[in-house]
Image: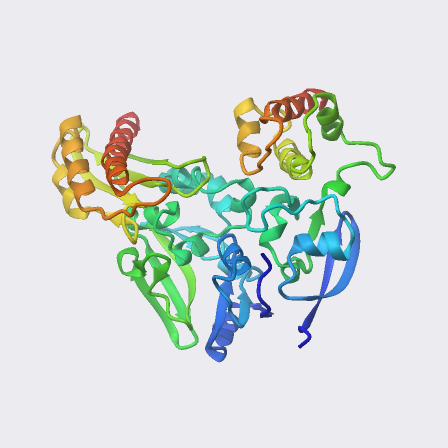
Length: 290
Length: 159
């Protein structure tokens, strides 16, 4: 369980990291390393050189804007988790992080690293997909911005090109006053990867009618799934249990989970329906209270 | 072929340590094999068991999930750094003895680091907070009960 030999370079700036990526064909970026290092220890990944972006202060920030909160790619998960201003405006992030790993891994793990790793059952990619986060990628040639939907390409696979570094993530803030969100999942142990995860965010008007809804499922296909069409059917309803159950059942039909030692495909699909409904109901209750 | 070596300077338990290390040397192997600080245990080597927990700049992390080169310029506290310089056990360590918070002792250094980090941030945690703080550390002997008791006792003894 020792990594194969590799060369190492600590980048002092984003420009230097991009330059190193452009120069070395077989380079890999390391942020928190909480997924990459185990994969290297098991020799599933054997880069020729690791480009370390941990010391780039410019990649660690949480900046509130009018319609979004921007987080730097190398912002630690623990920093996001503790940020009260962020939790007030994008509550789903703290709710998702409550299910991510353990204190020791969140102290080191980064938000950008989790998105770039793109485990289909991971919590932060699901939150990004459901909220419609946008992701800024930089290379020596310039930068481009992708929606989460275009960013996640498959299991452990994204649209990041080999010479690109994830720079920052924009998390949309919902301006509706009565907004509620929720995240839930089933895992073997708390902190393990989810068998299936679900999250939802809804907004209500003063009479309790739904004005906006988003929900999604993790661990249920090759990428985290969001269901904008099904969610739009909830707009205008009172978000009664029946409407929620219908939407959740339709979403579960669109999943394509796998079978493994821990759960069959059928059980995962069952969880998808049950957990989506649970997340939507909890989000509705929180919106009513707000 | 000999591997390229990288210079590192890491402050471990208050002492600056300089070394030349290959990039792939994990922090836990550096602590144990190079510095002979064998209090930190190495269990799964892929971030599951928590036995190798140390504090990096005061926050608990898994030292098997970091390369030594990444610790260059940082401060590390291992279980050896919890006791007083004369060897007197800390309040937390003493509480583990008192409540029989260990049997084989393999997980103990990681448990101590995780629990000490909790008490540093929150001197009087609830049982739920204690269980959450040690949630990333596996113990196959105690069933965790005495470990939770030890942390509670340490919190009571901390004014």
